[in-house]
Length: 384
Image (tube, rainbow, N blue to C red; front, side, top):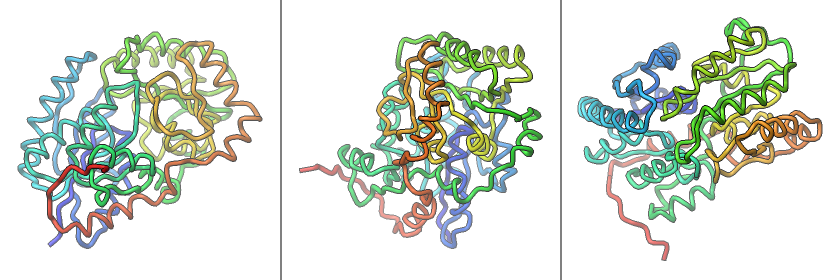
């Protein structure tokens, strides 16, 4: 009999990273894939991206509504409570032998705490990382302590998870699972992209994704307005801006980017979600990727494309030489973009080494899960 392995996804970005892992579980002779979908995927406000999951050939085994239409920290906490209630029912019905979660989102924390109490082993991807500008940092470490298997993206992150008391034999340096797309996913041509986006891509291009910084007393609209002011200094570049995530403060950014796109319809395209295939295809065509998304740190350097990383959200992550960090004010952002677009920095990007692996993570993770004998017991691992 096959072992049921449930994969949880609550956001479009996370699903894009998990795609090839889900495909490899689906193809396994000893594992059966279960898919649990929640969060932004089910929200019309964020594009109802659950439809893309089904279009990609996956069956959704459970949809758990949890996301309140709120832009406050209280709203996020209440969403987590709703999620925990729904996840308890979904996990009780599906009873997977392993639950896979990726990263550091509040949606993931809600389902992992349910799985812990229900004695379902959790396999956690992308643990051991640091993002000092967001409460995601503490969520990630909390999930680490509740998880059984750990598939990290670099060796320093593996050592950090072990430092947190996790047994070395259950901590694997798999690399970043999203890099599997680099070798396994066909990309769209410029013409295909233009048709799909209904937006002419006939010149230099900037891709923008900006999220609120949730741990600092920072007005997300102020820093986003600074970003828009900086973009105004590059009128010869087309701009694609994706929606922020559902963290508190994220919804306040959406009307600003929509208004910016409406004022510049020939130059700017605002879109709730590109989906992973369009996103990576746009990255490959872009002159630079701008914002504060983890993708700019982890996946974009593999394309030899410059990243302008704004503000403190990603502070603490290992990064490639192709990443330029700047303050969240218009002057600093403009200067960073100009540097990113320079011929000198283009040469830097060509030589930059991405520390996040070789693009073969999914099959290695599946191999570990296939060999799991079902024994589920954790002891604290002291470094001494």
